[in-house]
Image (cartoon, rainbow, N blue to C red):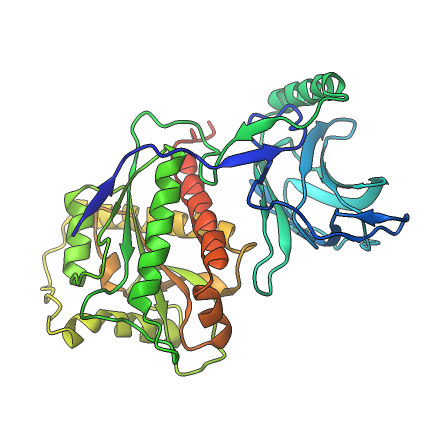
Length: 427
C-alpha cells in the first residue's frame, strides 16, 4: 500500500519572546506549558528554570549552541556589533557555569560566555570570527535522561546582511520596550523559504505484516514502532507545507524490500527515509544512527545489522533478486555516485538535528549494504531509531514524548537537507 498525503494541515501554534529583528520564529512550543516552581536564590518562589550547562561546536560554515536547562523557558536573540556577536537571552533564575568550556572545533564562533545579565535573565554571548546569522532555534522538553534544552544553529552570512540585522535588531529592541511577547506560528522543518515545487519525501516504516522485524523481550515488535514514528513524521512534514509526503505502508502490511525501492523510484522520490529499530547480541549497545549504502560496512556491527535486515524477505518466504554483473554504464555509475553523495549529505543533516535531542551511537553517520537503499536515482537513508535489545532504548521507543522529540529532529534535518540543495553555491 502506498499512502500519499499532500494536504496542508494546520501548523502547531508557538509562542515567542520578543523575537528581535529575525526573519524566523525563535519560539517556545505551547506544549512546554509551565515549569515547576523552584526556590529563587534572590528570595521568594520562581517558575523559571536554571541554565545547567552550555556547549558550542563550530566549523567554518556553521555553529551550534546547546544550553541544558532544568525546564523549558522563553528566549530571545539579538545581533550586536563592536565586536560582532550574537546574544541569546533566556528567562532563567541563573547559572552555575563559571567558565564555559572552549568552543569545540574552529570556525565562525571563536569563544563564548554565559552570565546572569539581570535577575531572571541569563545571557549567552557568542563572539563571531565571521559574520553569521541564526538559521533556527528551538526548545526541547526534557525526556528520559535528556534535560530540557535550547538549541541555536548559526550559519555564515555576508558582512552587509549582518550589519543590516544589527541595525534592525537595535531598532526593534527600542520599539519593543514594554511590548508583551508576540504570538507567532512556525513548525520544525519550516525554517527555509517556500519551494517552487514541493519535493516528495517517501517514508518507509520497516517490516510489517508477517514480518515483525526485531522484537524486544517484552514482546514489542519493530514493525509497530517504525509505523508509529512514520505516521508522526509524515504528519509533521505535511503540516510544514513544504513537502509532499508518502508512506510505503500505512498499516500492518507486508512489503518486500524490492517493493519499497520500486515505490520510491516509480514515484520519483526526492528523498527516501527507511525507519528501523534493530537488536544486537550485546545489550549495552544503544543509540540512534543514520546509514547510507556502501558495500563496505563501517564496522562488524553494521555488517550484521544490514545482513539481518536483508534476510527478512527470505524469512517471510521471499528471495532477494539476484544482481547480475553488467557492463559498466558511465551514466548509471555517475548517477549512483551523485545519489550516494546526496544521501550522505541528507544523513549528515539528520544527524546534526538528532544529536542534541537523543542518545546517538558513536560516529552516527554510518555505512552498510542495506538492500532497501539501493535505488540508483533516489537519495536514500536508513534511520536506526535505537536497539530493542537495550533496556533504555526499549523504554524510550515506547514513549510518545520521546517519539515526538525524535520526529521533530528528523523534520528539522529534512528541512536542512532541502535548504542546502536550494542554497546557491558561493561564486
